[in-house]
Length: 193
Image (cartoon, rainbow, N blue to C red):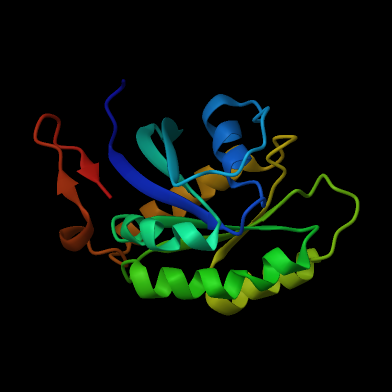
């Protein structure tokens, strides 16, 4: 693996069947996930991206959306610097569930976490949640906003790049306290978030 400047831990959250695992699969391997089974517990992967000549390593954790796994997932919020909060644009129920996920993030993550509200499945014809509704929710809460199709690959790579850029911006403007959220990697002096 190459040397990296930062390691950012991101978690993907949202209701079951909004496409979280497909999103991770497409980001890591540039191909959609073939099987669509509900995640049990946690899955993760690592990928390096290049931003302005610097390697940023993203450790991405895919969480189960079922209520029964929420207590297990809570421990993963604390060490994450970024959250991808997903909903399915063809399911108003999944969009209505966003508020409960926001409470989970607020109750369990650090105060400097960067949140992206992710509207998935934009390739589907029957939309129940408009772009305007999703974007307005993100603006009202100070979140990044992205519309993606984890099945078709639309916007996925850009989403991960955008959240990494926002984290770097907040580091550079001291909105993220490196003293609280960075551990030095003793072998290479890499910053871990």
